[in-house]
Every structure is written in C-alpha cells, then in structure tokens.
Image 1: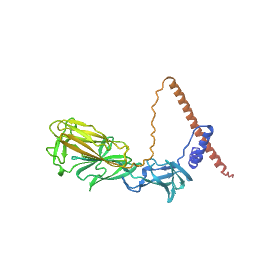
Image 2 (image 1 turned 135 degrees about the vertical axis):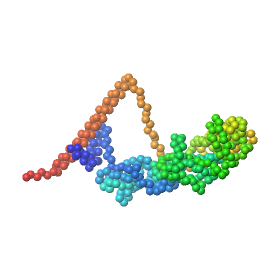
Image 3 (image 1 turned 60 degrees about the horizontal axis):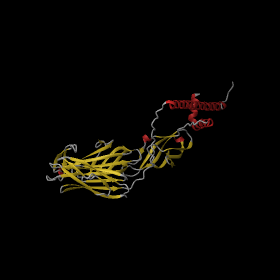
Length: 410
C-alpha cells in the first residue's frame, strides 16, 4: 500500500495536490501541498564571460532539473541571488524558449521529458560605487567600494594608482578590520594601473596602500606622544629642516554617486620643539564643518575630521580647500569631489524583523495556553486529513488497477 501511495504521488503530482487541497477546502481547513516541478542548481552556475568590475554584462547559465514527464506551464521565483538578471531564456536540448518575467517570478512552458536543462540570463557587471584617494608626502592610500546585485565569482579589478610610490599592499576591509589580500588576490601594479582578481562578491571594500619611493625620501623624522598615539618612523618628501609643521594628505580625491554626508580626515604634525596652535579654515562647496583650531605639543600630531555633504548637488566635479595656518606658515589641502550619476538600484526588499516576545503573566498565560492547545489540535486534524486523503487516493488507484486486471480461470 505504501509503495502504491508513493508511486501515485510521483506519477500524478498535480492530481495528488488537487485532491488534498480540494478536500481541505471543502472541510474549511487552510491546507496546501506544494509539489516541486523544477529546481535550480545555483552552486554549479557557469559565468560564460569574464567578470570585470565596471566592465561588460555577464551571461550566466544555471543547471535546471525538471520533475515528472509532462509538458506544462511553470511559474517560479527567480534563482536566489540573481533577482537582478534579465533577458531570461530556457534551452531544452537546443530548443530555445522565452521566459516571461513578472516581478520576481519567471514563467515558461516546460517539456519535462527533457529532465535536465539550463536557464540562461544576463547579469550587470559589478560597479565601483565609491573611490577615495589620499595622497601625501609619506603615504598613498586608495579605498574602493564595489557593489554587485548578483552573487558573482572570480571577479577582477583594474584601477588607476599613482606611480610615485612603492610596496603596494591590498587590504580587504571587513568589520573595520584590514585583512591583507595582496598575495591571495594577486595584486600587481604596473604603468599606473593596479589589478587584482580571484575573489567572490556581492559587495566588498578594498584599500590599496603604498609608501614613497625610497629614492625620493629626503629625511625621516620621528613623531609621537599622547595626541597622536605615536606612529614611529615616518618617511617625508620635500621636507626641510626649517619646516615648522606639515599636513597629510595634501590631496584627497573622492569619487562617488552617493547623496548624503561624507567624512575624510587630515593629520597635522607639529615638527617644532614647542607647543603650537593651528588655525583651520575651509571653503564650502561641499565641506560644511571642521574644527577651527587645535593646540599640539611639540613633535606631536592629531587627526582632524572633514565633514562633507553631497545632498542636492548635481553630478559633476567640485573642489574645496582646507587651510591650516600657524604663524606666517600655511599648508593647503585640496579636496576634489567627483559626483557621479546615481545608478538605478533594484527595489529594496523590506527586511522582516522578528518581533520581541511578550512577557506573559496571570490570565494572559492561561489564554495563550488555551490558544496553543487549539493550534495543536488543528495541526493534528490537518495531519490526519492529509493522511486520509492520501489513503483515499491510494484506494482510487488500487480500484482502478483492479478494474483493469483480467482474471484467467483454469
């Protein structure tokens, strides 16, 4: 009987589903039995084009498995992680079929006798949505944030970097921690370009750091103390013995499409043998706030935040300047902003938040207990209904087969 029941479920899934849900509907219980008609194997997907950040679209195919042997119209959700794909189609052993997209659902007529086939679609390339470059006399730093709406593998990046530095290091930033990926992601720097590859993403942030070319360093000074926390030896470019202080970076480049607040930092180093007060001013094209002064002990340094806001700005290039003055000496920091056109983003899904559990006391606890008892009884009744429906189906199939059986007397 069990074998017959299992066989009928596999051979006639639609009938099984209809019988069970139909009986449940007659009795008035919300019972639904879902039959699997198709499954996607996203783990064995194939990217038919190289995945290059800021590159071209990628054609992806995902293995598909059909269940049953009938031809029917199938409607299912897009494969998880690839909801932003487009130009979908099915290739059933050379028979190309168009796929209709309706929101997050895709539909097509499936010839299930094929069993194993492929779903094809196009995915947009990953994009650099933010790029911040700090250039100073003693260091170089570029931070890039990459965004992708699809889960892609073996991604490669090719970005511009300054050629005036050496010992380039690649870091992955996760949870505000720098993880050295120079070797694992094959960082190479040549002719003003940095390339690295062999990483997977949806979204990631990387930082490329470098030190000055040793042949250009004129002097090494040592600074430290409570204000700056101490950084040990700092190589300097264009430093002169009479220079009272300096500011790094001297150039900040920000490329982004984000509308809203941004933040960067500068560091002021006091090189003289006495305490000094530094006055700070700035232009206001997109910078809106900085502290106006700071006093530093001798041979100490401090980091000063720059607060910016791109809200309401049109896409384009903007430049602000930060001026740091002590006595008759002034240092200038150039802050360049390139505001890009905002990319059209896929509709965000509203996250489902778990509600805090109630603390139940007194009569409320008794009421909840009664409700839980009713739910358990309802669940048991539902289970009995499903079992009874399946037994009924088995009986129908048994009588049908018996009716078709010929009895030979001898």
